[in-house]
Length: 457
Ligand code: URP
Ligand code: ZN
Ligand code: ZN
Image (cartoon, rainbow, N blue to C red):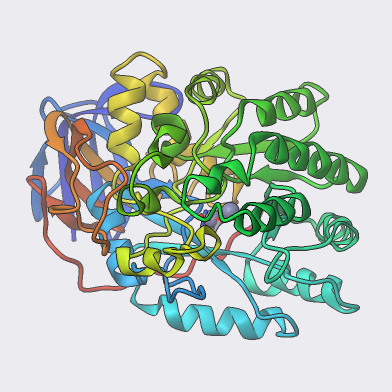
């Protein structure tokens, strides 16, 4: 389909300028000065007064994630639909094999689960153990499957977490193969000890979730993992940074010119640990890892977004129904960990970042799209408003006001951790590979599933 988008204000990571865009066959074919494109379009969108961004890229989501309390409540279909409605057109999820399972086998299963995904999508591969032939498997992921990023967990040692010696070997193997390691940084053994201690003392409510995962144990893991990455000379991306103390180690590494990238999520900027005071029903939705921190951490993270210490904004989207949270009614360790926000990432960062002058509009685009695309080998197919790029385009109404609620969100979840948050700015149109999936602020639907994206760093 040929679509002309006229009179809009384009916003990229570098600049803001008026231009018209012509879309053909799912790609941006031309970008010209306003009024100068003489083309015959099947559809024309008048973007007067609207902003135009490259489609959002969420580099950290967990659709249909298996846990002891059941799967995360968004599958690839419902989660990707919510993502598109909120302006995110590309998702990066995870392949998490069982111990002993070959990486490629796990990848094939995950691709089948993701077949209903409406956005284009990619995966990070998670080695969950060290084994003799892992280096060859890692190499094959990069060269044969187009998966160059490998996610390791320093927490969750009883299931998917790695011991330090295994972790170091993974850094070496990934560096050797030309990939990147990403990590969940929390010191797992120390956390396990604290969790056991609290429960043995009868301290079993969600209030003890953050107390058993203190900020120092995140910062300590960040410091340790940065040292391992340096030893192996491996590019390193730290997911869901929540604590001011972690930022110090990240800054020092970046000042030494070590290739260290950092991601945070809206909940670490906008919510704090006061959410753990109250009844189980009030507090359990906020049980996610790392936990919410102090207001001072919120401030430090905003500063890090604006000064460039943090380059990427994910969501760690991992919603659960209240019934699944109730799995841990008598033991906070059994509460399904995670919360959803894939639908809200752009509007939250726009409302509470751009409109409150904490970040510029161009930095916003960099954080939600262009930089994740560059870091993870998707640019310029994704993350760009350029001829030849995929026509993943968000046409943004900067004035539209909404109130977030589980009553009207599209995510498949009966709670919303941002319930009652007021937002300004929302997608008026969303194009996904040239298909208009949101029109006049309303979800239109999408018949075609998205594509698996092969990546190269
Ligand atoms: O609580 C969370 N974040 N659940 C998802 C798994 C993870 O640690 O990213
Ligand atoms: Zn994590
Ligand atoms: Zn995660």
